[in-house]
Length: 494
Image (cartoon, rainbow, N blue to C red):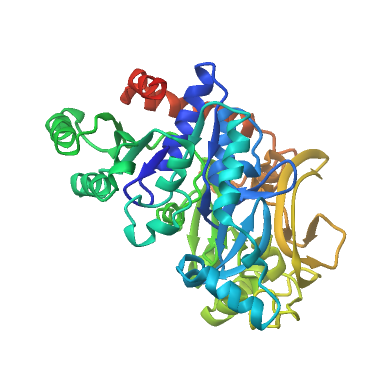
């Protein structure tokens, strides 16, 4: 298990690296994270939903993703409430206090005596995640586990499903990952270990220091001191990297994205929604050297962009209301009238229609709102969630993606298009070369003021699968160079 001193220390990336390393070394690894909290999710081949990090790690391991790799997924819908996805299917919404509170079962019993029981009261989450692990461990070896947040949240320890309690169930060797880039790595590593019970402390077999910048020799003394005070070996110090591209699901990663226009490139403005989800939809486009992709809710920047994208969202109606309040809706409509291209993905697609209705209060208290009126569709929110992988045709070429959405729109079209406006429920839509070339072919500036205008939009592209495979290998090489892999194997074999 790769556990962390906190959130965003790099657990997911390190776990992905070891999924690829173990695969390269002839093993059959699989990733596992008992409970994940993220809005970036993915669809398994069976049409079920898991956290994107485990889908990425499964890719690194060279195996299809499965719900047993992430049996419990929490998708925040507000500051206090999350949709609970168990074994790939949503089972209801839960207030954070109720979910983490000690009186959950008592509250469920009260609910049972007063009115119809909440479906969440009928599940033993600890048993569900342990059963998922056991099924996975029967099929793969080793299991590369990931913890969540900090392992030292002692106020939540008796309700922990994902960190040390899961390590105990799996009899896992725990490697603690600390982030030196944010500062305070000695205190965070030492404190995380010392706050464990004696039983759990014995499970921690090593430390990895992540995101180091500068001359590695400067940390030699620090490494020795850390081993001395913690009584645990430092297995590696991994330098910060900028030239390896691995999908990330953390909202912290989104905060580090670009925020401004650029000259001599196609400016793609992704509208920054409060409940934005699956922003990895734009990673491929962001890496295109012809493109400056940035995130914004600045109305002036939206109007100046060449392409405007409304992304997916966990709360379509709430974010649509916010777009009207902050002026972004009007800026998008004005830019469209001026000939700018507007694209909507999933919830963003719903917003571009004529109306969004929620008569049953699936999302909350807003029952109906007019959309931006750029596409001739009407959407009604439904309790049932659509989750599936899809193949579609675009400009005569076969493309792939996946759908994760609540609500249905009154059209049979997989892709709804009008004059310089396009919408679809398909995540991964912008990962497909034919789509990218269609969007960029008349908008690329060659530096002499002219724009590329080839009708076939032909470019030599490495396939997305080949690109990802190359990145996983680069990540594995990077980690092998700076972590004592032989010592890791010794730990696993004792």
